[in-house]
Amino acid sequence: MNKVKKGYVRCYWTGKIQLTNGEVNTMHCIQISNTSIEIETPIGLKGCKKSLLIIDAINNDQTRQIKVICTPNSDIFNEHDQHYVSFDFLKMSDESKAFVDEYIKDMRDSM
Image 1: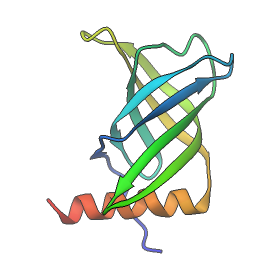
Image 2: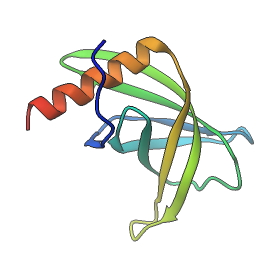
Image 3: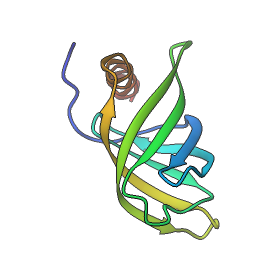
Image 4: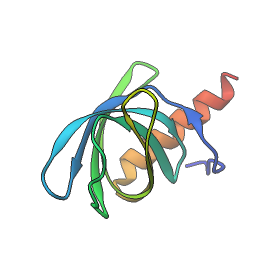
């Protein structure tokens, strides 16, 4: 597997965020790197130190449901009445990591 340089690319995947208190809501990805992700969601983190993201990912007509446990860096309430949340990846399967790396590579190659 080729190593992908750290750095964000635009991402339009959708999915769900689950907080450690059990609350679940919709989210969509804004940017992604091989170590972190930025999302927009209607709910804030409410003090949770970890969250589960269930992402419906697509790249080159291939789909994958990515489940990743993340730790938050920031939670900003924006002008669209949404929470803009930045996360670092904490735990993700090797297959999901490879899918994200390939997506990032393909996005960079298309620029």
